[in-house]
Structures are given as C-alpha cells and as structure tokens.
Amino acid sequence: MRSTTEVVRWLRREGITSRKGCAFTRNALVKLFNNPMYRGEIAHKNKGKVYPGQHEALIAPELWNEVQAVFAESQCAYGTATRPRRGPEFLLAGLVETDSGERLHTTFTTKLDGRHYAYYVPQRTQTLGERHALGRIPSGQLDDVVLAQIHAALRTPEMVQAVWDAVQVSGAKPDESEVM
Image (tube, rainbow, N blue to C red; front, side, top):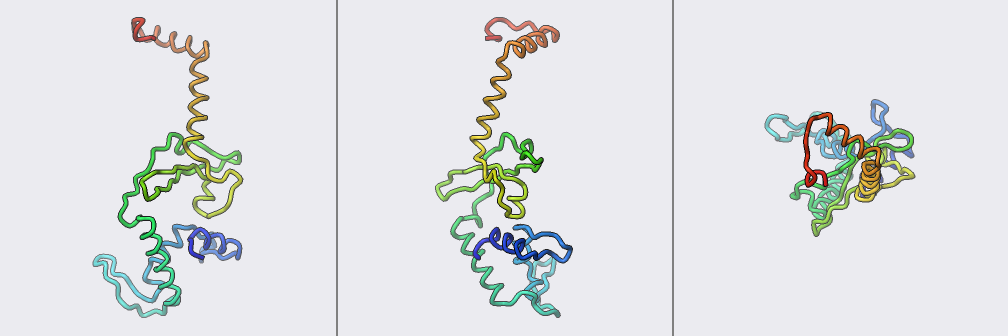
C-alpha cells in the first residue's frame, strides 16, 4: 500500500484500532509515522534534536524507512514540501450536510500547473477514508446550483415586495437609478 487512505481502509477492515479503541484517521497515521518514539528514539521538544531512547522500536526499521521513502516520494511528486497550502474559497463551507446529517468537509487538490480542483466530501470520507454514495462533489457545481436557487428565490414578486417594504421602513429614499 502506498497511500495513507488505503492503510486506513485496511485497518478498518481488519478491525484494528488505536489503544483507546478509536478508528485510525489519515492524520493520525501520518503523525504516528513521523514520531521518532515509534522507531526507538526520543525527541527533545525544546531543542528539536532526536536521541536514542531506552525503549525498543515499535516499528521495524525496514518498515519505517519504507514509509519515509513513500512520504518523500509523495512530497517530491506533488510539491507539497514547498508549495503553500492556499486553495480556493468555498462558498458553502460548513453549511452543507448529507441526508443523514453528516457534514461535508472541503478539500482540494492542486495540479503541477497550479490549477485547483475543489470538492465537498462527507466527513467520514475525509477523516476515515470511508466510501460514501455521494463521493466527491465538485464545489463549483454545488455552488452554482445553490446560487441559482438563491437568485430564483430573490426574484419572486413576494421577495421584491418584501425588500421594497424594508427600504421604505428604513427611511431610505433611493432614486430610480439606484433601484434599477
């Protein structure tokens, strides 16, 4: 396996959990494989130096090195080591849920040519690597549908009248050019 998502899925299928009984997430695996304690070393938190520990390694050195090589390959291939994580704006961030009430999280990928591809994904897909019937929803498509609905609602005669009434109550005196 050459992907943390694949590893998370495999761990869930095998019923392997953390010592607290929680399912592993992608972020937890990345932290685990970057923590020198698991390879039998201790990191000094203030100096940033790593020293040999008095405990045995919990991860075999061969596996540790293989995982580090995959991480390095991924960073090199996708440029994540030096490229800032600045992505597209999400119009509906934090506002959209699945039919079962699961929040949709925002995610994006940036291609080598700089193009962003933005998506809304169910929370469990994002954190646990679970597959969901919705898959990844392109943010532009969902944003366009929602904006079209908002525009349609704002154009109804009732809404136009409600806005006009609110303007009148506020005491504002817009002229024709401001209204049109």
